[in-house]
Image (cartoon, rainbow, N blue to C red; front, side):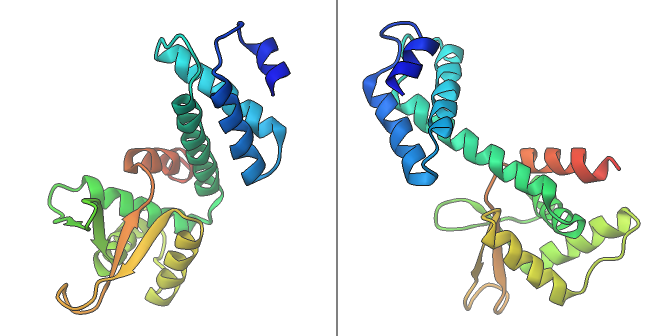
Length: 186
């Protein structure tokens, strides 16, 4: 890593700790030195964009988050169409001024499962498709959660009986954009 960074960056422009963090991240995730170099490259681009004189630890951490998001959006693009419609429905709820959002303990927006299903049904019908049954819908929710694209939690008593609260894991505008480019453009 040190030798490669000397070839890619000017002398003294990369903090030693940033190299160590990139190496540690890569070794813990997949052991691939190319991933560490990719993180370092992205960190350099971030530092340059922020007009920072050095590539620092926080640039590597930010580049890691960006890399994780990029992977997630590749996963979204490869999902079956109805799972993409479901994600799109969740993202659409976040921008609906009439929809009353529920905030969880961390202040993030959650959506009621029944209302997400209604929006999913509406989205599919607008696209000339037949929505899947609620059984398939629950299956899709489980699949999306396993992939880390959403999180679900049972509401417990007090929130319209027992329902599931759904939270999107990534930026709603980016999720919508990826799906619109991928599947809605067809």
